[in-house]
Length: 230
Image (cartoon, rainbow, N blue to C red; front, side, top):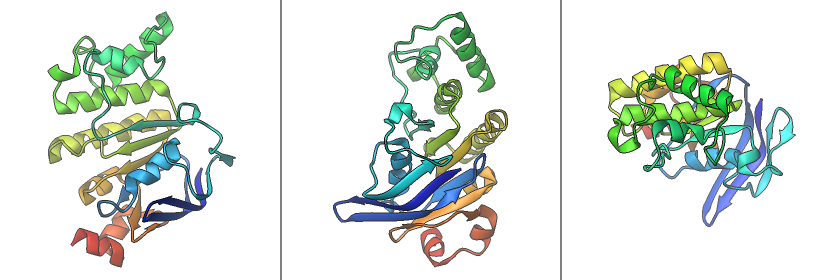
């Protein structure tokens, strides 16, 4: 279980509070106005933004003492963070070893991850030669090989069209069936939250609200969400 225990995130005039838990193995969309703190919330989980107050716990363990690389977290950002000079295989391999030097077993693991995301024939291709959807798949392969129990996606499919975005969300859902990882995904699109088929955390007016079923919230949105949706 991921728990925000009276967490306060502050920077200048920005202030965000969070006091709730996310069930292990669940899928949770995070939605709210630009600048509300959605990405900051994920950054705090990943260890890139320290809470001013409170604790972030994973399975009862305070994450504060752990550096980003030591946390049980795999994170994909909007630009997918692919290195342009590396192949799809090499980018995915970074999820196992920063040096990229793999043994036979690790090489097979990366190849299997590329196959799972539909890139079996694209291992030697560099990002510039891949479509947007294929670049997203390469980032997902890197996430897979890390085998972390907590996956954070910060609008990784925002640049894709609606049909391709829906395809990528379906792929994420299918991958999580095998890994049983807990997912938090920042999105600006209510269709993404519905497609994810889990809970929704609304971030607005300085508060990250406790998760509720996405469909129910979107069908009868509270004031903060209704104002955002227009």
